[in-house]
Image 1 (cartoon, rainbow, N blue to C red):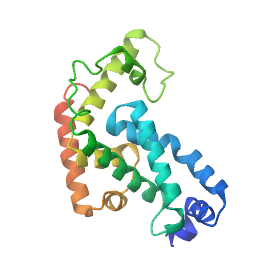
Image 2 (image 1 turned 120 degrees about the vertical axis):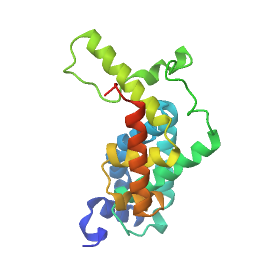
Image 3 (image 1 turned 90 degrees about the horizontal axis):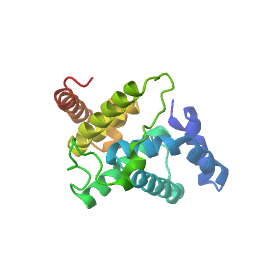
Length: 197
């Protein structure tokens, strides 16, 4: 079945393409948090993640007239998000990749970035909360230290649960390359996080 018929998000994008602004608003509302979280996992900076997500939606908005549904809408928008994040990474080079695990944040202005993405209301003790936050910071630091393509592939697979073929489309690489990237990324994370998880 073609994505045009089976994907309600494709339908919304086609409505937007035909001039219905409500289609874009619904897509923005549905994907905003997901795209911000994806960008945040890539750059570990909440403000930058929001700026990158805004760029993703700006590109979606501008691409409306040229939009052709060849895949699920989620595959298409995440492909845009991957490109935006990789472009930003090229611009900033190693600025976000060289922070030490021992000093994850350089100054007090970064304190806002320390909040976990998801609140866990089952954690009761302060010690447990601190250990969990510390573990989260170590995972975040390990992700940041993966090579760019491995990081993108791992985040798309683990956090966003895309299939290998969808990730291949989003990253413009072969499915075999995706499997290799994810395998190597997971191996690197296991080694880095030995004793943490």
